[in-house]
Length: 140
Image 1 (cartoon, rainbow, N blue to C red):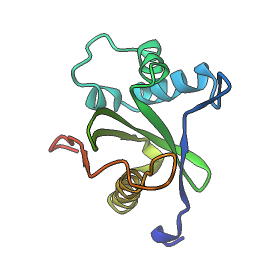
Image 2: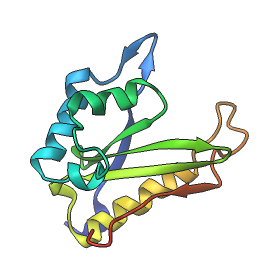
Image 3: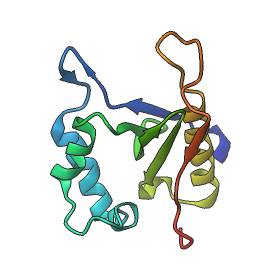
């Protein structure tokens, strides 16, 4: 299959009437996969004792907004926004091994940024962000 034919989608972690669209165990499992694939330390480089409960708590507080990345229907990573200030936010991402590879990961990354820049307010009258910033280690 040619790389640019992959279907990339983002599923937001959200609540409706107090019920989450993903169970807590699923969100903690995403972090467990990060640990298993040895990417958690790169994403959470300043959290020495960070674990699955901490990961879940980040998104329960609603100061961090999480999306699950799917490529061709297969879970392939996560990204989230936080540190909101005015019309800016900070972005964090982690791709799972099935999404590794220069061509695929660049395509996913570009789509993530485009998605975030095009998020609109509830009335769909204006874009939420003018600036999205993120840090990527030079070895990644």
